[in-house]
Length: 226
Image (spheres, one colour):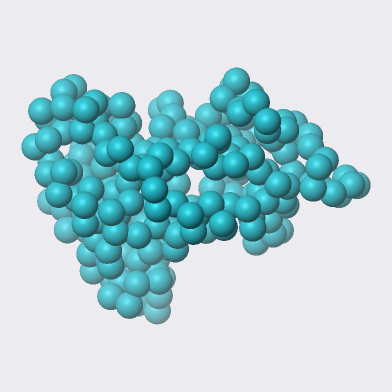
């Protein structure tokens, strides 16, 4: 996997990452995975089909593959077969659209939540997320359903189709793109020429320094398959 790179805006103001295809989304999720720890909450925003589940799946699969106890699978009521199988093969991680929560026995425990079908903070509270926020890695799709239960400390990842994401860019960010052949270095920028999405990351609360440091190292405006 080759990462075409450009210096991002500071994460606290919103870092824009171009994801031109599903492989780029998987690569991005795998890069985020080792930077997340117990007590981290990742809020995944975007319209239906924006790639929230795909990104969550990539994070979960990377964590399970790296975990020495991988292969434990999902602990929710659904029989998912998720996790790392024989020979290290990572199996499918299902969407929790109907189960609402899938819990994976990694270290730390991973909660993958889809709150789309919930309509009140009371319904959310019944899922037991308050305890998970303190001890687990929590990935939440449709986080607007959390209401007042949203943890103050979180990483927000907003996904949008590339043409629709320009309005979400921070004022000091260059137009999204990647340093492609023929361009003159990290300050070059172009519009995305292929179908894809943009991910905007913003962090709230303390404890995101390691991720900020890696974001600077990535210098990512676009993630492309070699």
